[in-house]
Image 1 (cartoon, rainbow over the protein chains, first blue to last red):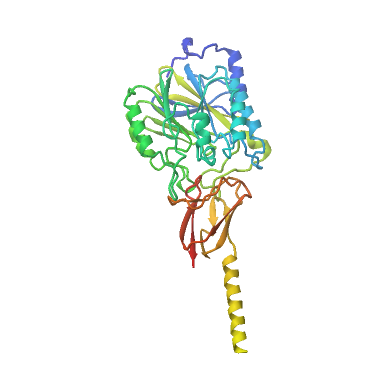
Image 2: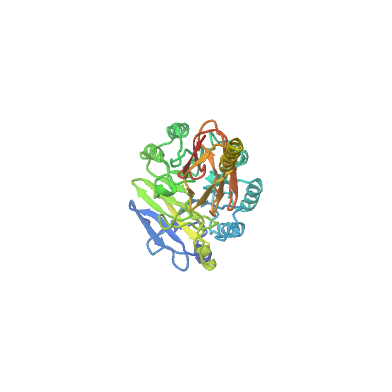
Length: 319
Length: 107
């Protein structure tokens, strides 16, 4: 990895003060990154430091936030606006402000205008531009997605997919919550896959790629709709790239997987937890003890580590 | 007397038939499932779906003609549709498409 004697690799403005700030942020902070080609998880210590010998030099970091479900008001969390605000406060206290934010969908609970308004209002408190993808809760208006696209569709293609570059990383936003068919898992669809192939044709294999979409692109639990039927076709297009990170939401818990150069991770939400795969009669809001709720909610800080091809993923809870 | 009896019987009979067809059908939504997931009814019956889940759901006729579809149903919301034509109607939830059901409408 990196030599711990090399101070140039420490985060900008690092020092004890920033590490203390970092520990206020960390909560249950876990850094997950590739070390010598092998995925490893490191718990941050009480000062927010990584274990001795591991130094994170971040030339670029961004945050993934997901499943805010503004409009939800049932017992699993009667106040998702409050917990979203807490998550935003956490992001605003990061030692280094993120360069951008990804919201991986289910911004609202019922696609109502007032819910979109409230969500956008609170999210404007984040310190960077937000790039959205819709969740299935965001496209249940009468126009089956028109409401989402009116607000977030500018510059996107098809049902809202797009790509952009930032700090040498190629970001690809995919939509897998439209055109559902009875008895089938979510799909990306032919048009989107064709667009993806065209989009990737201009991307060098050495460039790190981040793909974000609401529903997991790999199958976690088919019986609960936790997967994308044609996700394998997207993965086939991505396999030749040196570093691919796939960030999803939908399931309100962190599940990780590594396949060759592709790292998969789902995020916690900021609204309510869901049961672990197969551990309940079905998916949906899971009521936990009030004092435990915030340990199930959180955000992900993603760092591009200098000299390491893969991105470091830091999952933190609100507790 | 016989004529009156038979007229009376026909009247009772037709009353019974209309009563049966006016009976509503009910489909409950629990744990991301429709129950029953298959319902057989007479034409003219109104079917009501009731969502008991904490998650919202929709009811959607997957056919291109899109004969019936609900808006988003939150907890305790309901949606009704009267099936006036015989046939087999498949429906599903557009948010959770693994949730499927069938209504068979008889004459």
